[in-house]
Structures are given as C-alpha cells and as structure tokens.
Length: 133
Image (tube, rainbow, N blue to C red):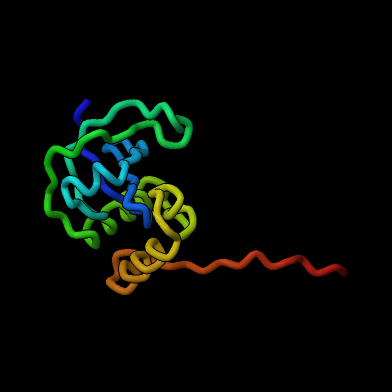
C-alpha cells in the first residue's frame, strides 16, 4: 500500500523510523533509506506492508521509497510537535520524544527553539514532597 510518511528518526545503522499521516509507526530498513538518499524531516511516498517482525511496536514496514519531498527537518519537526501539543493540550519533552519516536535531545532542542520563537510556552512544574507535621 502506498502512503505518505514523515521520517522522524534514523539509527547509526542507517535504518530509520517514520510516521504515517494517521500517526502509526513505520520501520525503514537501511537499504531502503540509502537507495533514495532521504533524511530525517522529509515527507516521502513509500510502499508499506504490515510489519511481521515487531507489529506491536511498529505496525508498518517500508519496502520502497517512491518519491521524496524536499522538506527541511526543522519545519517538519516543528509542525509535528505543534500538532501533538495542540491535540494533547500539553506535553513534556519525554512525552513528545516518545510519541514522535525520536531522541529526547532532538525533541528538547526543537521545543527550546519553539519557545524562543514564541510558538510554545514553557511551564516548569515541580512535585514537592509534603512536609510532615
């Protein structure tokens, strides 16, 4: 089945992960990534099939990339994070990273940029222990 997917994370091995337009995870083997020379942040048209290896964590497997749009990583990540915050109303960096299947550091850096540009507001909360009286 052909789907538009957004590349969200790439491992040192060259394998990568992406999200479908319905926010389902897609695994992309390194061979498929290298054939088209695509990178994290790009939207691509891919042929995906059900993933038989780890369907509980990543239900789709990309077997081929057909076409890639030149989308900058920054714009794609910002859009993904803002969409996630808009749908959930709030989120920690760890929650954002987990939902988008990316490293915490990458999510933290992008969230900091969005806060600096005024697109997000950061609220720091602490759970303080209650004092015994």
